[in-house]
Amino acid sequence: MTRPYLHWSAHCSLYSGKTRSYLIKKGLPFLEATPGHARFMHDIRPAIGFFSVPVLETPDGAFIQDTTQIIRTLETWHPTPAMQPEDPVMRLLCWLIHAYGTEGLFKAAQHYRWSFPAENWDFVVGEFARGLASPEDTDPKAGLARSEAFAKAKVAALSKIGVTSDTIPSIEHGTLRVFDLLERHFQAHPYILGGRPSIADCGLMTALHAHLGRDPYPAGLMKRVAPALYRWTETMNRPGITDAEFSHMPPEYVRARTLPDTLISFLRFLWADFSPELHATLEAFENWRARTPDACAGSPVSLDGTPLLRQSLGQISYVQNGHTITREGWPDILLMHQYVLDVHRNMQAADRATLDAILTQIEARDMLRLIPSERLARSASSTVLASPV
Image 1 (cartoon, rainbow, N blue to C red):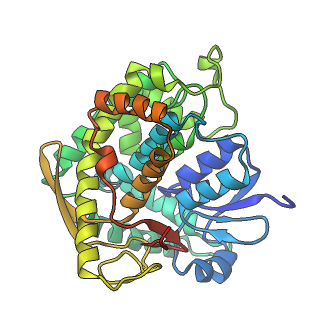
Image 2: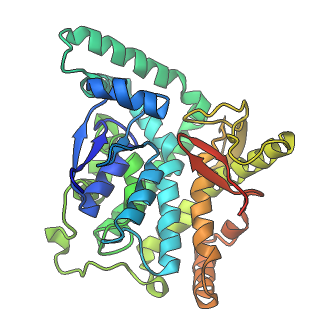
C-alpha cells in the first residue's frame, strides 16, 4: 500500500465500532475522519448514494460502504493474519456469532441508547454533533440542533424495529442474558473463540461498543454486572492480541471438539434468541419472491423495489423471550445467514459430523434447514438477488 486506509466513521456510530476493531486487530494501517469533513459530502456521499458511516476509503481511492463487505474484502486482500479460523466448523461458528452481533442485537442497541433520555440524551446528542461537525462550523448551537433533529428521528423509528413498551421487557431480558453469558466467558477467555480475535468479536462489537459500551446508561449497567465483558470492549479497541490478564494463554482459537462450556452456553442462547427473527424474515422473503416472479438477478430485495440502506420486506412477527415482536423485516439478516450456510456447503463429512454434534448440543439442528430459495448478494449499497451460480 502506498498510503493507509481511511476509515470514515464516528465513535457514536453503531457499525463503526465493528470495522474499527477489525482494522485494529487485523493490524492494517489506517487513519480516521468524520463525515463532517468537506470531502465526505463532496466525494463520498455521491459515490455511495446516501449518508452513512462507516465507509472505508482504500489506498487507490475506492469506497466500500457495507461493514461486512469491508471485512470480507479485506480478508481476501490481506489473508494474514487471518481473522477467521481455518477449521471449517469453527469458521461456521465464527460467522454465526458475527451475524448475531451485526443483526441480532440491533434492537437492544437502539433501546438502550434511546429509551433512557435522562441518562443518555445530552451525551449522545453531543457525540453526534462532534461526529458530524465540520472544521468550518462556527456555531455550536447549529450543530446541536442538527444532532437533536437526527436523534428525534431515531426515537420516532423505534417502533419500526420492534422496540415498544410491550417488547422492552423481552429486549432487556435478552440483553441481561447476553451480558451474563459473555461475562462468564470473558472471565476465562480473552476473545469469543479463545485466545485470538476473530470476525465474530468484531460482529459483537457492533452493538456492544458504541451503544451498549459507551452510552452512559448501558455502559454503567455493563460495568456493574459484566465487568469482564466491558474489559473485552476495551481490548477490542487496542492493538495486540493478548492482554496482561491472559498472558498465559496461547493466541489460538479453541478446538471444535473441545468447545468451552461458556461458549456452548452462549451459542445455545444465541440461537434461541436469534432464530425466531431469522425464521420470520425467511418467510417474508419467500412471500416477497412469490409476489415478484419477474424480479431478476440484480433486483433489490425490497418490498417497494427501492435500493435503500435498510430495505424492507414488510412487517414480520415472531415470539422472542415470550413476547411477540412486530417489526420491519430486513433482508440483510438472510445475507448474513448465507455466509454461514456457505461454510457448511464446502465442509467434508467428518467436519459435518462434528458440527452436527455441536448443533445438537446448542439446540440448533434447524439452522441448516433455513435456506432461501435464491441466493442473495451485496451490490453497492443494496442486498439484491444474486446471479445464478
